[in-house]
View 1: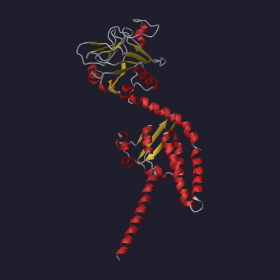
View 2: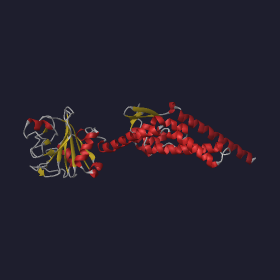
View 3: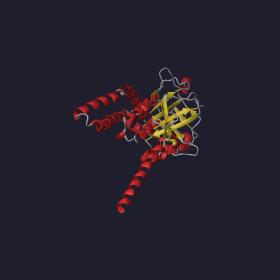
View 4: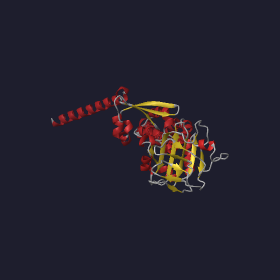
Length: 365
């Protein structure tokens, strides 16, 4: 009697489990039950993936901790960068992928790293070898079977190799772009990869460039010189970037850094330089201008924001605007431009003392 009851219970559990699995599978495959959409974009390519946020969050700390994935009222969509998309794909069980599943990945190939695709290829070959063995094991000898399967599935997968190769270089470029732009990922000013390359070349300090963070933003922290000093003083190597209302972009770099001096403290720094990234027309070639040793390289005073040069080559007052620029006193001018000329005074910001700061960002370790 007990044996029959136990068997009935076992049968019932198996039946329930089977039904639950089927129900769960139906829910996962039915887009009407999904509660989140991930939009993945890459230049001219984009697509939408319907997902279950609760499942992703339970399987990946990245999805669970990322603030941008937390649902707000009437919001359930986002744009995803490659890092998020790769995290999503890493949740797949690659050990059980089939040839049919692999075919579905074709539309995603431009977004996937080569290492992932190679791994997928190997899994596809192995999975189908296993399937063929189960079906045909009695029909053929093992070594012949293995050779036939490898040739069959290797060809199936290698037919896609030219497609992978086509996108490999683009993926590498995208990866390098993301790494170079990482330091300026939250910058409102530096959004051009060519500007990043120039700054990296001029600073010539990979350790600083890889570790630096934005420590001050005028829009966020306030247009006030004391606020600026409270964030940037005594930080050593410091990068200052200014964008004006007229879209000029320029700034300066010092290896010494600023101090919270109540009076003006002149500081020499033979490695300091100022730079111009953009004029109002956007047709200027980015340029670096070295310290000529005349006067001070920078000046620290709570009454001023960033101040470069003894002339002053450029500085911001206690309200961080309007700005002032007498370019060419302590820093070398471009060829053909003379100090005190209108061209020199207008070079960095478009005017001598009437330019308005749209944003001031300061970077340091």
